[in-house]
Amino acid sequence: MTLLIIGLVLFLGGHSIAIVSASWRDRMASRLGVLAWQGIYSLLAIIGIALIVQGYDLAREHPIILYHSPNWLRHIALLLLVFVFPLLFAAYMPGRIRTVTKHPMLVATKLWAFAHLLVNGSLADVILFGSFLIWAVADRISLKRRTPLPVQSIPPSRFNDALAIALGLVVYFLFIFGLHAWLFGVTLV
Image 1 (cartoon, one colour):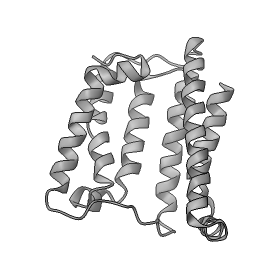
Image 2 (cartoon, rainbow, N blue to C red):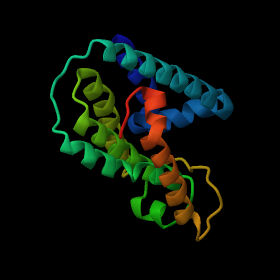
Image 3 (cartoon, one colour):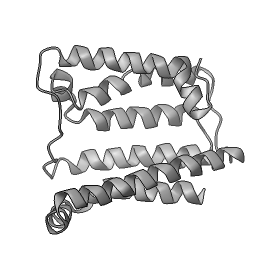
Image 4 (cartoon, rainbow, N blue to C red):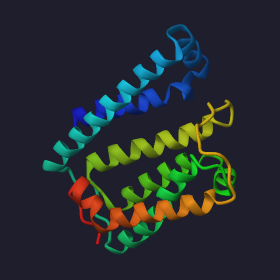
């Protein structure tokens, strides 16, 4: 569990710098240089992800069960997850989805985390998915008082929403019919 927590601290901690102090982030990027700052940030994120994956995998060997979900919640979770990948794509494709949701990646993160909390009741699950859910909520609240950095995206087009939905659904079905099992060892259907 320790590796999981250290990984979450590194990954979400790095992603929380702007929540705590966007001005400090900007000063550090200016002092170190944007590329150096992005390099350090990326390195911490990669190390964090690696520790999250390894720590979560180790925690699943001897799970501490906090709750059991009824089987029908799996259907609700799968339905919520339909929206996750289209929202992730919409974050980089200017269109109506991005305009309406304002921050589609945060909406996707909240849906992903909440759906997983509905059906996964071990301590490691609650720590992992709960941390991402709390972080996404905190980040969204903080965006009401700060200006987000611009997101590099493809050029605006009237087809971006359709493309985000189509690509997102393809990835969703890939996950449902094998990719999730291959990556995480958990079969969804």
